[in-house]
Image (tube, rainbow, N blue to C red):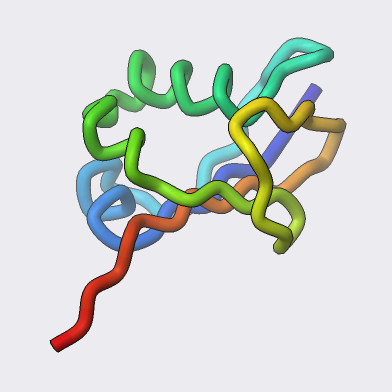
Length: 81
C-alpha cells in the first residue's frame, strides 16, 4: 500500500527532500516505516528516535497501524530561544 511521508527540519535537510511516496506492506506501523527510512533514505536512527510522528495530522504512537493513502509527518523536536 502507498503512504506519503512528510519530513521537516533537519530530516528534510538530511534527506534532500521534504516529501516521499513509500510502498509499505499491509499492517505496517509507524515504527516499521521509520525503520525503513533509517535504512533506505538513509536517515540517522538517532535523529529519527526523537521525532514526533503524526498520521493524517494527528499525533500517533509508534505502534499505530498505517492504512492506504495515509500521510505520515515526522516532526523533529523544536527549541526556541
